[in-house]
Length: 351
Image 1 (cartoon, rainbow, N blue to C red):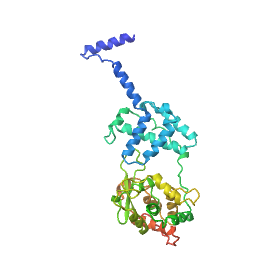
Image 2: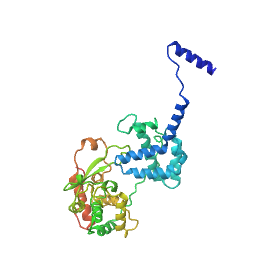
Image 3: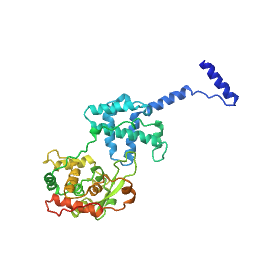
Image 4: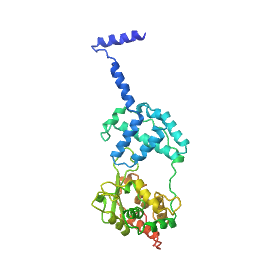
């Protein structure tokens, strides 16, 4: 019966002058299978990380590590599967395994990176913004899109230092000579900016009274980083002056051609904060926010100072105020708190 139906199809095609469709050759079929073996899930994650690195995204190293440990080494058979064949159920099984090993937060990060990798491959069919090489994965749908993040793994990692601990850290770096001390002072006195962004500070982005950083957070598919300006107190400007050289990058121990790694900066900070229990430089960020909140600085100004919580149509498109006076006043309050000065507490809020 199948043969009869096929014959009818051929006859109908000939009747309208259409040549019968030739089935793909054995050689073409083998080549297609080899291509599918080449464009695996592991290959997709590597291509995504390379793309992120090329766009200057510091998250590429974190993504590579998570993919290697929790996917490539933990699930080699899935990693070797053609990316276009990966199912939602297989993704969920991987995420569940990571959580069950006690890494709920990491499972959410793995989910986020995987979702972004598939979205990048899909977007390559519709936008020239993405490398054409992603089209070869032939991905038409995102198996991660319908998965849900684990709410237990998304709790804020705050744990701020007490003001006394912050003062202890400040005293350890306040008068330390050399580039390391200046780097640590600039980080603290500019409000605990994200280390991954701060270490990339360039001479071209330094003004007499401010620095410009670039926030790529929340742009997993490689969108342009958002610039934001951080004003400098007199002490912070002095730290910048100590770091300026003929090189391109301020956070460099060599000729300034290459910035130090964020992990190197963390090592510097941990050494000076050794006297503080469970000290981590990332705790400085929440410390600044906590100290400023206690001194009447409004949530919007705190968010704009640290480049978070800036969203919405009004903020993105209509509000052109740079908030530099408010951010500078907040930094002066924090600096006064570090020095134990009884600064006048005022409500610094958005105008």
